[in-house]
Image (cartoon, rainbow, N blue to C red; front, side, top):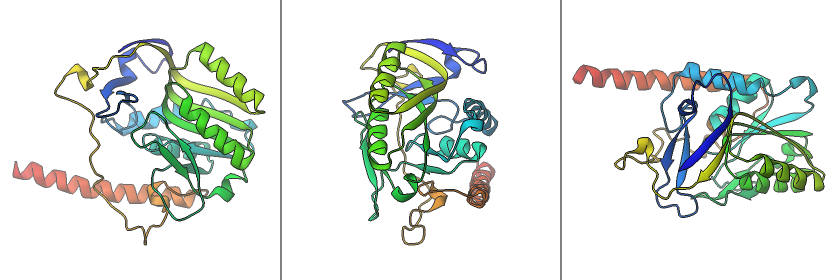
Length: 272
């Protein structure tokens, strides 16, 4: 993989501070993956670093001019950072999901993904908004973004979109072309990122840390919720969140889980 970082926020001391390359197993559509070092999804990070990246991204949005706006995070990687940014901006939040429920929803595709269908629920509340802030850890080609915006515009008639990401690989020419296409559809769109780059050459052999014995894996989650009890629950980030009582509840719930994990880790330390 050959790439070039063209612009980066001063918070990144060097290019390697931003991400690490990983490999997608069995995915012929896109075999590589950019692993963010700031969101704790695939690589560990300090909570203070997560808070820092959320703060810096939130500063990109001028809330003085926001009216009736909702934040939308992309599953699965950006659900956490999307919710944290929405919390900081004091805006309602919803995430896309790949889970299917028997409720009204809209669907768009992420063409390169192993699980390409994304679903968004609470469609009636989406239609009440005037602006969407779309949040992802990185934008590669913009194709998934285009699919999503077309569906959202068709279903909700919202014409104002802001795209917020840690990293954006779209070249200036591609971004200008994207904006032009959207404008022709009557859609206003703005891009905000902490780092911008260009992919020069894709490599079919990409491994995490450049070691062939390491690759990205997706373990099953250690905590499950019964769908009957937590149907489209705000705990999982799959539901419309519009009040800070939900955020407080999520923080409390996450703290309790962290305490339980600490007990488990502590007991293993004592045994070893």
